[in-house]
Length: 436
Image (cartoon, rainbow, N blue to C red):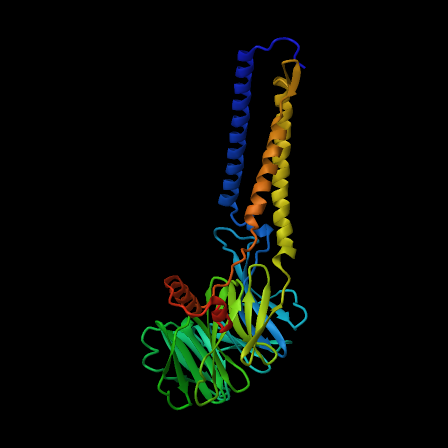
């Protein structure tokens, strides 16, 4: 309580000194935190990333023995330094239709090819096989860089880069021979754009040439004339029940457009078009339980759609949303910890200020209390939350569907004729005849 008259000039000078002191303390604290963070990023840049197990997005998804195998690539930041970059690792998760297994680290690979009872993994100088139980490895010097493989009745076909050019090899139990490629394929094309598939004793080669998808067929003796498909964005060819399906897909925001063709050994069918609504980060066509599926990695969870005949079913959830993972709780814990430290700092500074600053003010026989720095900061935080939360979570607007263009033009014509006095029928009679 202030009993004696207050010297306003001295109070103003005191307030200015306190404001400059608090501001200087805040600037010094900010620069200290910045220097500490800069030192950590300079001497141990990967130590912060090692605190969190970051999301690993799927790269390959295939079906085997009624299971869906999801291969995801991630990075291990433990022990990383400038001389030792983060280690790249591949994880395998298995979805049996009901539950998803924990990730298991496996050896990295360049490509894979699923068959009825095992999966072939191709890498430089070798290939591995996995039958859901055991792993086997076979080394072969013929397999070059970035290999793409396919398994058929004649043996194992491998297309890889050797001496800076694509080379196609057929690996059998007795020998390994090189198969000549079409001239168009040898003209500077990269192996990463190819895909191989085997249908009985025929080899099918898909590769992109600019805005066109090119398809070649090899019967063991010669290559047939290529067939061209319009490039619809991303594509993948899958094998199912002695039939090859070519799937084109492209995303438009939260809309995925899919075009599906089938090859029965003689000709390709006309494309069937499907639409999927929803935002996805990664889209991978695959075979699951003898049916075509579209696997999607969303922002927070994994799901798949089922292509069944002329319609699409789903989505069917595979993994839990990211909100329930440990990472989110770690992030929230770090954010809340910094907020608590900040409020504790403001509270201590507020106690110091209250020792030197007037707590109350008397005017016209009434007494007023000054709000402390802590109370003002708390009020500002509450105001920020009240303004921000409604802004970041808007409700979807209700959009009224527009009538078809033809019917709209007919309605405008009727209204114009009514105005000009040329329409003999009343509006009610027009509506009965089907015009909206």
